[in-house]
Length: 338
Image 1 (cartoon, rainbow, N blue to C red):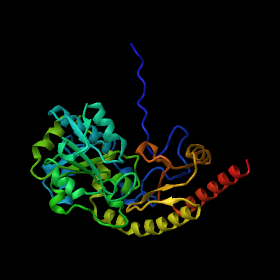
Image 2: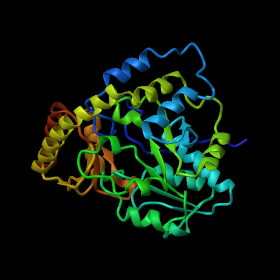
Image 3: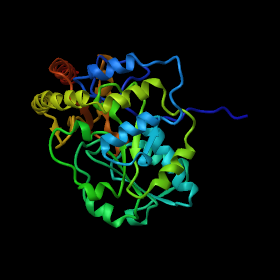
Image 4: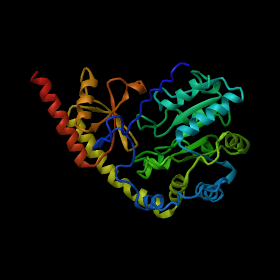
């Protein structure tokens, strides 16, 4: 039998070298974790199975969003949902997928795994992926209302992972537009608890049968006790109050970080979220990024997003920003003297 080889995936966060001291590569809330959500996770009863129907959690999420509980689809993570809905579309005869020019890699990986071919027009796709604020740019999704209007009903998934971490701007879709799309939510980023894997989706209005089909494709207990606790905490007014209040600090940190990067000679791209892309302006980023990583500073190389020569940086506290600036200036000095 041929040996199985691991699929190479490019993500931010800890890697084979461990946890970076200053991790700009992961877009988790730098002011987190949310104390109330952390306490809920720590107090979760891991000695028992959750209710297999997740009745109470579904009711809480439905009330939080003002929708029927039948429209709530729970998922082990955003990535798990991405693969599950792609599988559902393929099983129902879907053949094509539409992807944004720059996007989270799991959209394309799931499509390839299930044989969906890319198409240039969203109206020709059985599944269309959108993200706003987008990743990696943290910007508005260009032409999103027109895309949703042109696509087939219930074929669009809007990844809203970074909507709770929006620092400026407003969503492109109004309530009528949101009712036409799947909304994928991953609160662990906004709560600073990315190690707790838990997500959910809100099905388009009138798509209860499609939601039920996705439920039939799910394994038993996609969420463990800690994931349940995280999503229940997400619905609490006190947790939402903490999040809303924390955004002012992130805005201050972001302005400082952009000014620091520009002082280093980096070209920073506009962003509405708690992260942004920048072009450091060196001929080959690889050696510089490896040198930073050796100093326990990690940035996200945007080559896998189709943005060679750029990096994505999460907004971190001033101490981490200063560490990045000092390390980068040292790298520049070493290059100038060799």
